Length: 385
Image (tube, rainbow, N blue to C red; front, top):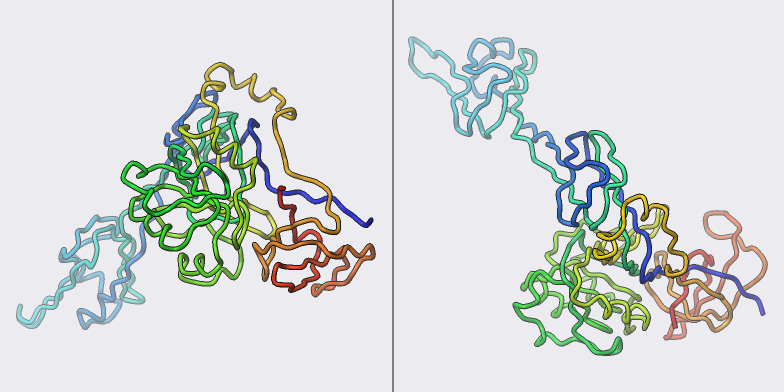
């Protein structure tokens, strides 16, 4: 029988986890190499320059651009407050003076006698980078950030919405096939990460946002519910910047799919423990998966950074991978059928040319409604049984 091997999502009970935490521009690193930091600790900070606000002083005063410096009441580098008088014409015989006030609080960046414009820069915006995971600072990158190494449980999802969040894991269902009910949600779940079982709908997610639940982990959603949640069609699977209170992590795909048994058992084992999650997803070059990380704090406290860096976790780290053959259930991980689940019905051994002109190995997938698609084998991954 024709077959191949293909990787799936990572589900590890214990593995070494490394994260690089870098500022958007150079700033100050606040921790030293070897420090044991908590997930919510700030490890670096910087100031992003404020926005520039142009003020057409020449036009507002009714003077020529080259005359603007004569009428300025402030100079370059001065700090000004919103509504502060910054320029004033003398008028005729001291009458009919024209005035210009600062539209924002900021600093006078420049005064041009060519354009007649004055540039005000708004105050800088502080940016802080948190550790994200509890672990040791394994490297300090001067003025830029740090690398952090940790040990703990690691679970990947297929798709996520929302960015980095933290919270204690709460499992709301007894089995992965069960679905949590809105009536189960209450104030006790505020700030937590809940495991909601097989599936949730838009109303459930909205209630989670109202309660400011930090994260929801679920097996599947309907694509229409996801569209309502986002407010737009997910054309390409690049997420993580959505302005939502609750990060959503989907472990299996679209439709009516329970959380994989091994994933669910690991989440149950982590109940009551502090977790870091990130819904950022990118299914393109440089694949990024949504993730759930539960650091083993007790283990970290008993072992040094040097021991952890040398430790080998091959025996406990598990990565789903297996045989791809006729009858195998797979998940499509590229657009335009991203997140769909189907069954492999054909594995042609010969290379076939695709739209880009490249020749690759392909397969044919049949969806539950009988629709068939032929696509590159790299565009699917195995579904854990």
